[in-house]
Amino acid sequence: MYLKNIKEEIKNIKKIKIKYFLLFLVIFLPKIDLFQLPINGVKQGPRIEDIILLFFVLSFFIPSKKPLLIWSDKFIFKNWIIFFCILMFFNIIHVINGKSLNLLIFLRIFEYVILIIFLNNLLNKGNIFKIIKAFIIINFIVALLQSFNLIGSFSSNGYLPPDHLLNQRAYGILGGSWELGIVFGILSLACFRARNQFKNYIFYMTICSVIIFLAYGITNLLAYLTSIIFILWFSFYERIKKFNFKFIAFAIMIPFIILVTIFLSDLNLIIVSKLENNSFILRMSKIDFVYLYEVYREYFRTGYIPGLEVVQDPQTHYSIILRLKTWQNSIAEFQTSNLAKFIGIGLNELYLESLIIRTITAVGIIGCMFVFFSIINVPMYFLIFIFICGINIDLFISIKIFIFTFMFFKINQLMKNGNNFI
Image (cartoon, rainbow, N blue to C red; front, side):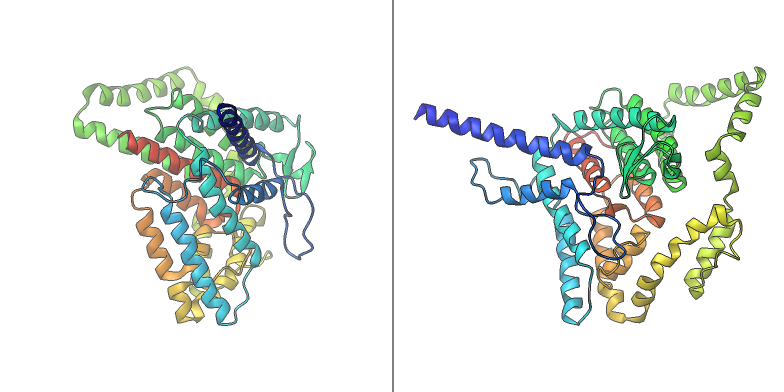
C-alpha cells in the first residue's frame, strides 16, 4: 500500500514537470510554423504552441488527485471567461441570422480560454518572477546580437537571416519588432507593479526600456513613455501631497545638476550630434502628427483614405494610414445596423490593425460596457499603455502578448493580496 502511494506521487510529479516544461516552450519558443494553411490571406500556420495547448485540453480528461482549479473565489479571471462567453453568444446570434464568421478567430479564443486556466494553475509567486527575469535576459542578449547583425530572427515568414530587410529592427525571440516592443512594455510595467517584492526591479525595467528602443516601434515607444511619465507624475504628486521634503529636494536638484553639467562640459553638443544621426530619432522627427490627426478625423467623418500618390511624405506616413483600410469594412458594417451597435458585428476579420476598433465593432455597446467595468480597478499606467498601443495594433492576435498581459494581471493579484499596490 505504501509503495503504491509512492508510485502515485511519482506519477503526479512527472505530470507536473511535463506541464511546466510545456509551459516553458509556449513562453520561450520562437514562432515556427509547422506548415502553411491553404487559406488565402492567412499568414501563419499551426505552430508548436498549438500542439501543446491541444495536449493541455486532453489533460482535462486524465484523472488526477490534484484537479485543475477552474473556478473558485480566488480565480480572478472570471471576467475574462465571461467576456469570451458574451463574445461567443453574440456571434451565435449572428450565425443564426445567416452571417458568416471567421473560424480561425474562434479557435484562437478557445486557445486563450485554455491558456487562462493553465496559466492560472501553473504560475505562482515562486516561479512568475523567475520566468520574467529569464525572458528579459534572453531577449536582451538576442536583441543586441540582432542589432549588430550577428544572428537572424523568426517571424510568420520563417527564419530571416541577419541581412534580411525586415531585420533592420530587433525581434528578440518573438515574431516581430512590434511584438517585442509591446511585450517588453508590459514586462517593464509588471516589474514596476511588483516593485515591493521584485528585487532589482529598476535594473530589469532599464533593460526592458533598452529593448523597447531596439524594437524601434513608434507606437510602442510613445505608449511606454506616456505610461512612465504618468508613473513619475503620480509618484511626485503623492510625495508633494505628503510633503516629503527630501524627495522634493532631490527631484528638483538632481535634474538641475545633470543639466548644468551637460551644458558646462559641452556634452550637449555630443548628445545632439548623436541624436541627429540616430535612425530612429530621424524617423520620429519626420512624423507630422497634426497631418495624421487630420487624416484620421477626415476618415471618421467621410470614410476617405488618401491614396499613395497624395499622401504627404509616403515613406513616413503611408504605413500608418494604410491601417485605416483594415478598419474600413468593419466600421462600415457596424454603422449600418442598429443591432450591430448593441452587440457588434461579430468576429469576421482575421487581421484588423486596432484593438480598439476590433473591441468596439466586435461586441458593440453592451460588450464595451462590460469591458469598462471589468478594468476599472486595473492600474491606470497599464491601461494607458494598452490603449495607446491598441489604437493601431491588434494586440491580442499575438499569443505572447496575451500571455504576458495575463502575467501582469497575475502579479497585480499577488500585490493586492500583499496590500502593496499603487
